Length: 168
Figure (tube, rainbow, N blue to C red):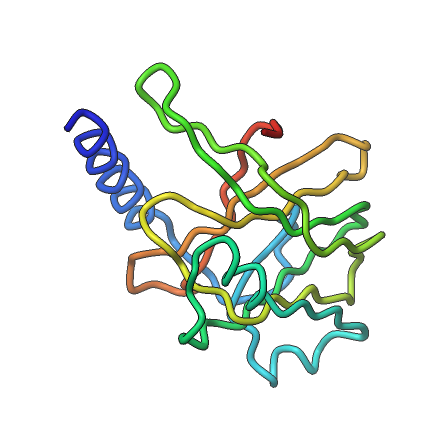
């Protein structure tokens, strides 16, 4: 019962947080890393595209096989190294949920300006994020972001939330 109550409070908090954030259309903004739906017109603006089909990971991790899902694009205006698609776990710690990396999947040596990292067949599953991206930033610091579906009606429908690096 306590975990359900904490999950509900977390969901309400994330919803209120998302509702208060003003979104912008996908343009280079100086943010470290961006995410959006991968439309063909938007993808045509990139010089290089690396694509990973998430379906086998999704089947193993979530058991979901019969839904198409969204096609997402991640990009940056800086040079990021050792970019990895990761699955996430979570645990309760001091009455908060803490995310951590459980497995590494697709890896790109470098994600740089003009390059798009496209993730196919993404499905949001439940209240806690299950997928994220990890990389080394310009200062060789490990950075980790969970992929979260934004529940507001504003644009874009997905966002990246940074969390402290920790593996299972």
